Image (cartoon, rainbow, N blue to C red; front, side):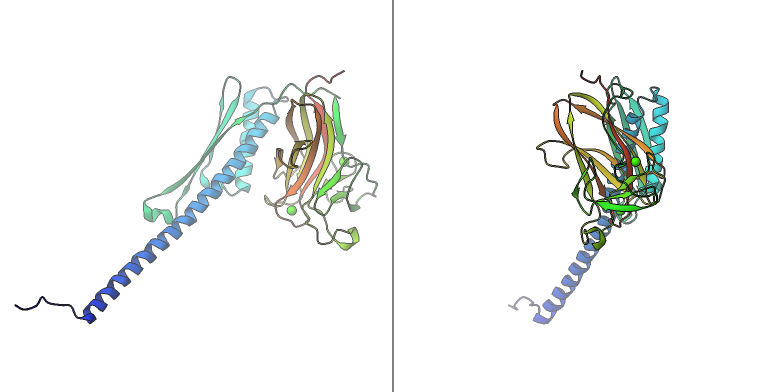
Length: 319
Ligand SMILES: [Ca+2]
Ligand SMILES: [Ca+2]
């Protein structure tokens, strides 16, 4: 009986090579597909983060205008204007974003969404990338009383001639808690909105200020004894240059003993004019708290400018 036909080692090698080539081609195709899909997913994730950021700021704007504009419609328009301005800066302009504010019994809710055209994901049948966010717009407590001030500082204790500037490690009320220092400008680049001086926290670092080599993004902190109640932090903010990434100011209020920078209460990203920012604060445990302003974003010695920092009583001052 003839033995079954046997493949020669040569034909086996040819088949294996062919299979291997096919396997490699499929693997490469799959790898390229996954890599391409990852690019779209990264775009979607980035848009998601920026949308959340825009929603947050618009919602804060809606709440901050509460005392001046009790009618919903005015505050809605302010919030939508903030959202529109923010989305352009953050590159969400071509994502077809939409924003709505739903009025509830006690709170309002901002719902935002957007949809961008997919590029590489189209080979997997996905035409659009969708993003969505929503959050509760918290309203502040009772109105801040006229003249009832817990804390006020506008950097006017620093005596420098008009147009001059310097970098310090402390002022009467503030101590530097991170970075090169606090840069005080006596209306050097812009007119101060209060007095003559304002502060920049992406500060100059050089041997002449004994801070060479230190990170230019800096933080200043002051310690304030708070009674129980409702308060509002007010301050003026201006972006030094036209950029969404280099003028960021974070504000924190931490109870004594807490890790500094635990409780972020505001985030100023961009404003082309001196903007009055208003942040509601509720203190349920009286005691010592630490208020910190910190520069964030690109470290290039230009950043957000701040002035006229006040904490006002929003509930009656204890007698
Ligand atoms: Ca000032
Ligand atoms: Ca900067």
